[in-house]
Length: 141
Image (cartoon, rainbow, N blue to C red; front, top):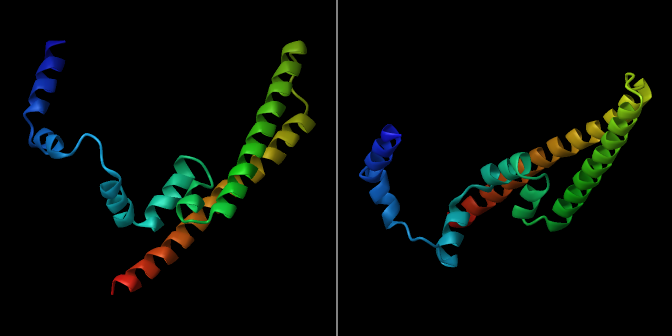
């Protein structure tokens, strides 16, 4: 416990801590917009689509219709897969035999489009973000 207190106290006197004290506690919208504008969309949008939720990268790239469609497809496939898995687990609890191949195959029919949609979302967000970054770079020049 004493070691944790020592580490925490040394972090408070670290140069990074003094740098963090200069950062305002709450960013005003103008500063947040500057950070958002400087972040490359070819990096931000695929990361959001890959790690947060598919379709978010398209929404960040201002493709609202495509982003909402991808988001709806992923949500529908996720809910359908969850319901199918719940019914499979319920049948396994009633009959502790191995689940039938048909039940497992029908679950794969939901997982495969889910993964394909997710991968498409990341690739599309990257390519659109790269186009937007290039267009933004040409505007600056």
